[in-house]
Length: 250
Image (cartoon, rainbow, N blue to C red):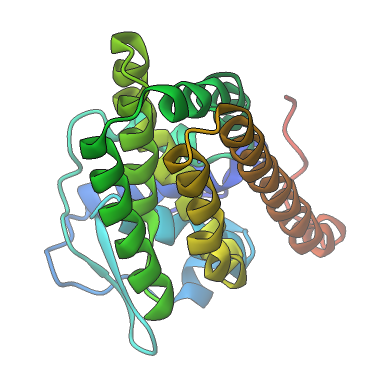
């Protein structure tokens, strides 16, 4: 199949979906390289940063492998069932909705965890926190381990509904962290400190402080997400004056 220009209203998601179709319909074998970023960006009529965001999204789902200095390679040509439903979670609008939900849920969960945590809860959270420290120290991705920390915190609240919500939120948290990690890698060096103050408040059984630092943590993430959107708008602005596709209606 031929790649075609994508609608601007859901740019990164549209690129991901078209790349999935391209991989499926050729078909492309595992280990096979995709065309160069320049070629793909020209066919899709998107900027290279937007194309890279889409590729990074598919890589996080285990479908592509990005080899710096070499190119982008197919890891798994057959997408898992329901993967298209996940792609929408990589948009700015979806990320903001997840953060709003997290503010409503995790702030109170942090307070309950401070009041109800057990020695076992603290041991688990402390072990996860140490893995975050090591990841930051080694400049490695902390996407998986930070999402694990937040799920463990929800379980430490000892509320069955919150525990289920923690499991439900793990994938959206992972996706949101991944967006920030790819777009603002410099921000990830603070991940250990942000989670350490949350852990310390819970360990001190200080419910008010736990709520406050969790709210601060999520508010920072909210601000980063808006900054990512502004950066993308700035990257797209020049294209809008070069005779590209007209903006689609919302």
